[in-house]
Amino acid sequence: MSVEVTKLPTGLTVVTDTMPHLETAALGVWAGVGGRDEKPNEHGISHLLEHMAFKGTSQRSSREIVEEIEAVGGDLNAGTSTETTAYYARVMKADVPLALDVLSDILANPSFVPDELEREKSVIVQEIGAAQDTPDDVVFEHLNELCFPDQPMGRSLLGTAKTLKTFNRDMLRSYLSTHYRAPDMVVAAAGAVDHKRIVEDVTQKFSSFEATAAPKPAPATFGKGGSRVVHRELEQAHLTLALEGVPQTDPSLFSLQVFANTLGGGMSSRLFQEVREKRGLCYSIYTFHAPYTDTGFFGLYTGTDPTDAPEMMEVIVDVINNAVETLTDAEVARSKAQMKAGLLMALESCSSRAEQLARHVLAYGRPQTVEELVARIDAVSVESTRNAARALLSRSRPAVVALGSGRGLDTAVSFAEGLTESKAKTLLH
Image (cartoon, rainbow, N blue to C red; front, side):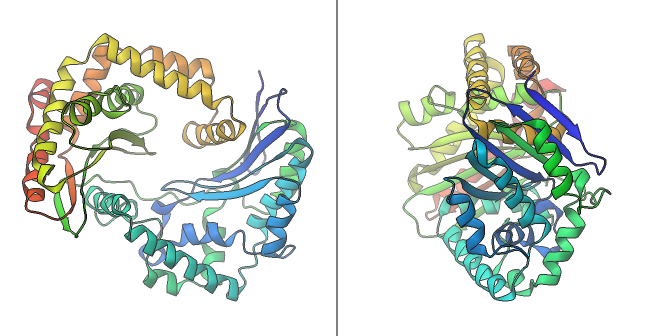
């Protein structure tokens, strides 16, 4: 088996997948900390810390960090999410030790130079402004607030201009030392890598991280649903809907994912066929399910002409209600085939593979084999998919947000609020 896992005495996990046919490698550090770990006065600090990691260390300037990687043809990047923060690189085989040295340096020895910090805070303020100019970003920001009221998960990862202004190097150092702990970190690599060599380097270079686990965030509480209409002069009405999903470890996870795919996961999905192909009401419509440690988020998005918003939402509710009880073997089989293809295609990319391994370790404590994942997909049936859909509609009231102009938005959200009053909810009890 090409996947190897080593847990260091500090609790940090090293996981690799050696792919001998490749001449390149992807590797990174995934930390189990994100937006949901922030206190109110820390709103946006996870994302700022990720930005500042590339702005200089005690050994390298910000320019030297990128030049060393790009001088060997590699690239370096990072990303912050609700529950994780990742720092990763893609390099040629011979440059894996260099990439690991840079990644460890930016996390173990950040300098947080005040001038760099102020510049980066200004950059993020511009990023916040760009998000506010993007309607689908704005509408999901409002939807998250509605789904997770008065909780870190309901806040934007970017923070606000006001909270950013208060951050200083001491706060960054404190947040880093509190949440970046060895038991909550994974170093993952895939491609042209040598597991033993990486373990040796990680043991040495990550020795400064504390061996005690970081504090756990408060449990998430999905809100009571409801609706919100945000008036803004736009060409389109942007409509979103959310229901409480299931956590990463829930047995029904794959069945719910199949339901999301059959409903709005591609061009053959029910919503795409009915709303776009038959009625011409939109350009884009999709559904998805995002699982977290202790909850899940089932979401829908579409954009349409404001005058068509009521019809659009009425059709969406009808399609969802109908799909719960009329899903066919062919639809479920098609969705399962798409999931398998996505899984196997990801194995052909060392970057996707490294990320998958890290996320498995953080979520399940170990990497899951391809055979395990395929078996879980194969185990999904029409009945398990219908049961997952019925449970979805009974678990929470829908949260609905409409962004745009026109009188039709209020009517549209009122249609959506009636979703869980369907026969599917009645049949579950």
